[in-house]
Length: 56
Image (cartoon, rainbow, N blue to C red; front, top):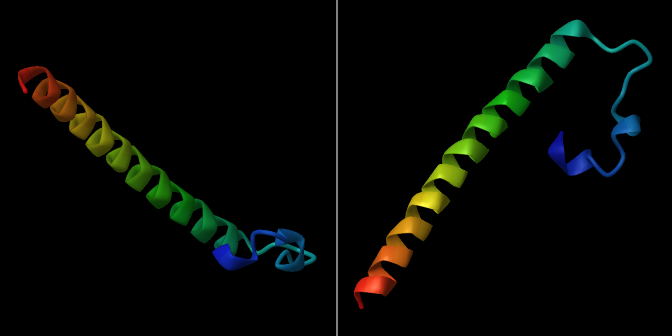
């Protein structure tokens, strides 16, 4: 589905199926958790690099 986000209207049926909506919501939640994890990892790396640069 993601490759078609430039034109989501093309994917939208006349009457959206509740099951499909729930599945898309779940996938969005999964992405949100992954993004949060990546942000925490990035922040930890930034903190490490800042400390390492001060020590160098």
